[in-house]
Image (cartoon, rainbow, N blue to C red; front, side, top):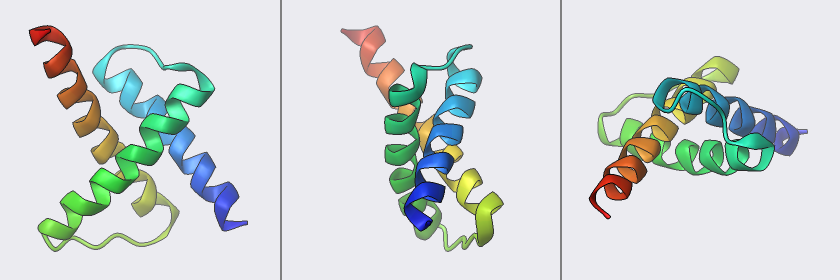
Length: 81
């Protein structure tokens, strides 16, 4: 069951980050990839600052923050290339 929640949070986080950064989503698989990688990045960033989140909303916030950072970095490299 936790894998299912992980996937749902990843999809939601990827979609939210896509809406915030680009104005549209990336499709189901793209949102999942962005959300899952964003969750890892967000967990790392929150760990650096000593921030701890709990529960479903905390996990979603962490994943969204990480996904936004990921998309910001991707867009920065895309513009320079």
